[in-house]
Image (cartoon, rainbow, N blue to C red; front, side, top):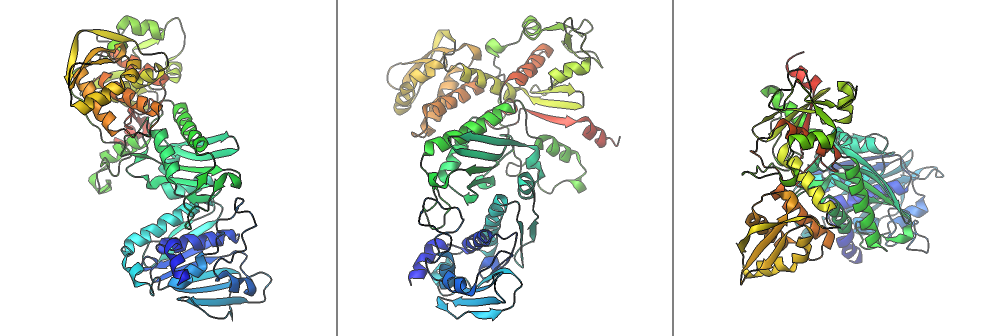
Length: 603
């Protein structure tokens, strides 16, 4: 009965059995681990490893509760995956457990059986080396637990997720999983990125940023996907602490905070992170499942994760996901070669669905005149350019003043190329030496304005006084909530005051936003404030304000731009951090290589 009670915490479902047994195999120095399942693990789970095995004396002790060979006298210096001595007796109390093992010093292998808590004597068996553990009829003697298990397919998927997490942590081990309830998977030994590509797909490598940061004895390594390479859930986020796969809320929260600048609430980054530290700095004995951990300095860990991820994303500049061009090329393929599902469907696409913005709005102080563009970027107008600001066929619109740099040299300094035209009053087409760029003008300018607002938070954003202040009617609680943040809003150049019960008056707006709809901006800010978590830091709240204001102040879809304005937008993208995606996680541009375009025409 004691073992059955313990099993309620340790063995929640078949995936828990797989996790515990794989960890035992890794602790036994196995280099090859094979897994077989049936009926989602309910009928059969078999784990085969080539580890060092156990002697007959250790085998008898291994199935006794709280017996383990992995602990010293210090619980704060745990360096193995398993250490509680609960897994095997817990499994044996709710299933039929058969263990066959051979230690290298033994003349033969030994087998022991535990069936529903009843232990048999060890018997000689045949096995060359390692250990084979077979679990059958899981929860057969605990029908209430069996009743609460999900379908075979759901349990199979849960086992696969556990299998992938452990395989990511140990790329030098060969893993395989098979069975009548699944398709077979085999992961051969590889380096870290090779194993990650095997599990997350080759596209991740093309859209990943390397993470390597050290702070006060904590070493964070791994790979994080670009913000535009995102997914609809957090199942593609993997964390490992000292090699242990963990599923800790504090770590997920830190990642959400790092990506909050780039992704909406319902999109999630893709990443694999490894945190290594002194075992005394982390407590892994929080729960019997060992998936939660506690750090002595949780704030330090959060700062390390948020800081390193944001630094890597900023260092990527205007780099955007390569998925966009791939999906576009897939859309051009004949129907017979096209995927059965829509490649732009929200659940499959790594992009947040595009919300088109309507209406006309000035770019404000970032409105680019012909003279400002030439002076600020060091360009002289090409005398052969046409009057609409675009170059004749085969020429670029601008060249360096007094510089003999060739056209290719110009492209090297301006990787987003030269603007050629605007289509559908929203998309800029730019030419590069080896292809073309399609830029979403609203998304791109939104990021530029957002970064300028953030940069101005320390010293304040210049404001412009409205000739006729705007009065905005709101609910009483919304009014109070907005006025509580008036000091923070003023840092962005938005000055509001109370105007009777249930109303505010907008007296000043950020100068860089130009002419905006103040009422619409205030209404959206109120909605943001209503959803804010009170536990969020002031900086996170200010970033939400900046993101909302940037959306209202950026050039709108439907606005026709001149050639100078388009080129100036491209140049600003090249010098603006994180300009590869807007602050909603959408890509600001898609690149098509010339070789792919030529392939469409059979060239």
